[in-house]
Length: 55
Image 1 (cartoon, rainbow, N blue to C red):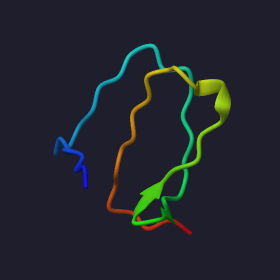
Image 2 (cartoon, one colour):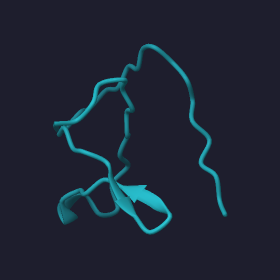
Image 3 (cartoon, helix red, strand yellow):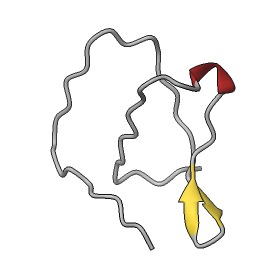
């Protein structure tokens, strides 16, 4: 199984932001996923993990 490395930081600076969305991570097989609109296929995206629980 492939493991994704997580960079642990308390601050992130990003330029040229088009927008952002808040999504809930959901189970998918033996892993998890976050849905994203297909208009962002091929784009570079950032997933930021917080300590807050999703509703």
